[in-house]
Each structure stands twice: as structure tokens, then as C-alpha cells.
Image 1 (cartoon, helix red, strand yellow):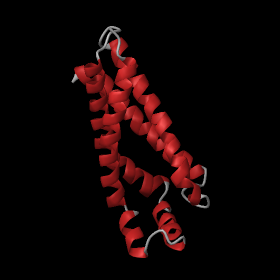
Image 2 (cartoon, rainbow, N blue to C red; image 1 turned 30 degrees about the vertical axis):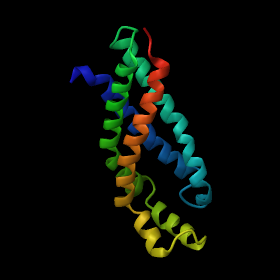
Image 3 (tube, rainbow, N blue to C red; image 1 turned 45 degrees about the horizontal axis):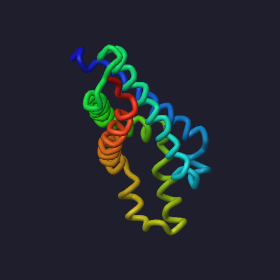
Image 4 (cartoon, one colour; image 1 turned 60 degrees about the horizontal axis):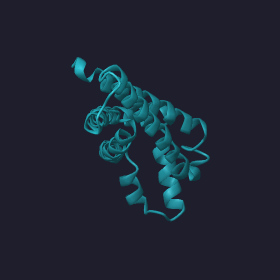
Length: 158
């Protein structure tokens, strides 16, 4: 387990930062009165996510591999972080939609229906805790793999 302590730490850091981001989104009104901006502005979290992976892989390189790390080692560390993030994502969705922003789903459903983006039934199915949990697990894994592959290219060091 000690072998993966850095990945576990950064997976938890990622989770905590994502919870802070959800609270920030709520404060900015992107879950309420400014929900029309949500689809655009929520994507800025990608910058933070990439930076977290950079810091995580640099930490792994420095404190586990003694300053040297191959692409495979970096990619593997990133994959493990991605798995930790994916495992924690259902809890994150629960905290977000039950504690931080319980009004998000009703607001986004109303927005989608009123703007003729979806039918009521489709919106209720898509914008639900179950749907978001499934999406967050899959998205976390897919984006984690991609991010790990790219970031490992930049932080590898012979």
C-alpha cells in the first residue's frame, strides 16, 4: 500500500478540490440564477484537473522515483490516481447534489425543458443522481487515462 501512497493522496486531493469547485459553482450561481452559464464555465475545472495531475506526477517522480521517471511509470501512477478519483466520484456526486447544491437538478431540468433542449422525461432521466454517478465514474476514468498519458509525456525524466 505504501507503494501507492502518493497516488492515494492525490486522488483524495483531487476529490477535495472537486468538492470545493462544486461549492464555487454554487456560489457563482451556476446551479441557480446563472444556470445558463454552467455548461460553459464548468469546463474551466479541466485546467485545475490537469494541474493536479501535473503536481501529482511531479510528486511521484521526486519522492518515489528519486527524480527520474519513465513515461510508463508516470502513466501508471496517473491511472491509479484516476481509479481513486473514479471510486470517490459517487460520494462526490452524493455530496454535491444532496448537501452542496440540492437545487441543481430541479433547476437544470427546468432550464433544459424551458429552452426546448430536452423533453421533461428525458431531462429528468439525464439530470438525476443515478445518471450523474454513472457519468462521473466513466468520465473520470476516460479523462484520467487521457490526462495521465499526456501529462506523463511532460513529466518523464531520465
